[in-house]
Length: 305
Image (tube, rainbow, N blue to C red; front, side, top):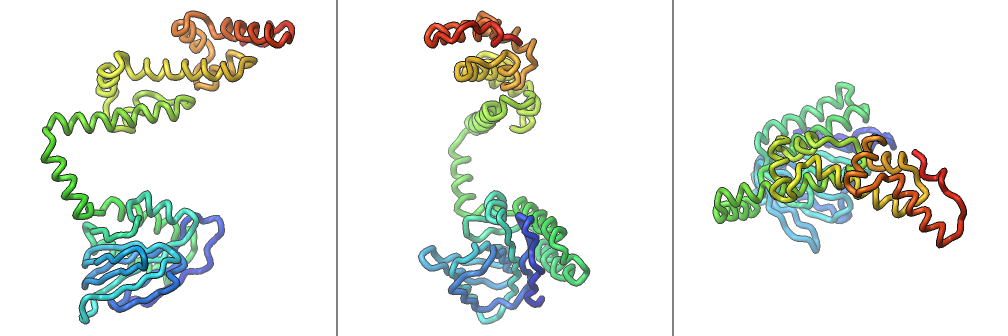
């Protein structure tokens, strides 16, 4: 067993840091005030219950991990008197909760790991490395972050989630499953375009992000919108530019083009093709309308490129 080890004071700039690490014989633990940081528990052998007042009771088996949030009163009670082995890692930092949640280790509940012994060995390696000069916080932060990512990739789905997914899979035909997958990928592609239309985003990068080839993603766009993905992105940018000009009637054509991430000459050409007139003429028209309402005087200089 490896004794409880604390690390040094964390650097305030670290969003994630190692607070403590160790292993022990499985035994009753009672923390009415909780623990100051997040704890990842790994049960190597034995079985026990984590009890959290007003939250519930979770039974943890050998080969599983359990993450406890900071400041949460809890109790751990082993099921047997033949003490198993329980490892733990304390993780602090402002980003700790977000990282653990994104990695699928929160909310609280047991998670089963593939290659459990590999992670147990890594916990003991971290413990021993504190004696070998790894106590420097920046190094340990990197190691802990990588450990969380690796754990995330090795988590088995919880039993009830697996059953639900398998039942759903059995109830769907192959074509329905493929259609459902395509819908999810297409929805994500659309979301990426609407989020990043101002950026230098290429269709091939959108396709890569959703796991499709450009050709396949274009087929989906043709099926749903009758145009290619590139044409959809171009129309989206032009529509966003028109909306932006509505809100900024005194802006220049160059500003409008830059706002949607397009080169100015190409923007002018595509804008006229989409809306029937150049953005300069549209800006002039809008300003003239505003001038008629506000009597602001000549404005020819405002719509220059």
